[in-house]
Length: 239
Image (cartoon, rainbow, N blue to C red; front, side, top):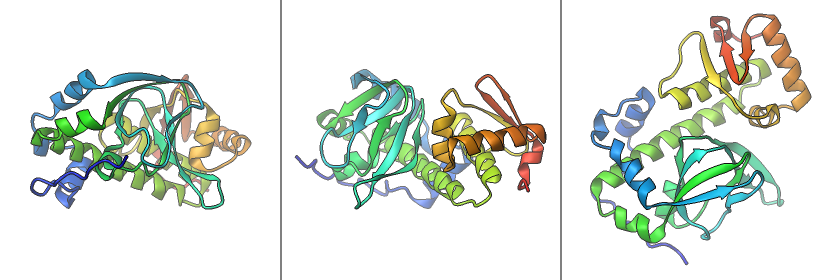
């Protein structure tokens, strides 16, 4: 069943002002939005997914606004040949599927890369919450940031130099985790497998290990537990 389209009250599309505010980490355009996620979580259903489970598939089934309380999911796009292309990942603390709730169709596959706990707000409750303009503005804030991060991840995957591609991917991850774009040295938490990191950076697992070893030897990268620390030398392409 296709979800009815929402009427757009005023200019609530992801306009340039929203995108600029998202990129700068500013929330002044969205005063009072901090309570929206808590309200959403109180009304959502908590669902656990094991590694490999499909959280949602392409099409109109299983529509829900989702908040990742824990875990990580891969974002995939099916190909005409029947395969899948990895577009990025959804990490703990992210809210996704807003545009799908508005259009009534899931555009991507979300598959659990680890065990995930997900808060899911289904169609009827979502439509009820959309009566509140503050909830709609919160949705636009989240959607603007998600579009920005997806664009950043896509740009990084187009970098030819594998070492620089890894560094820039970690930088986008730090941006997503901390809410501001890092300049100079930075660190990022990566509590997941190197296999998933290799897939996201678009290299083989053995090649990633080789490049990480070289970057560590050159003092560009330091790994302590689950923390990847990039020195200021990581600002320049590694030859």
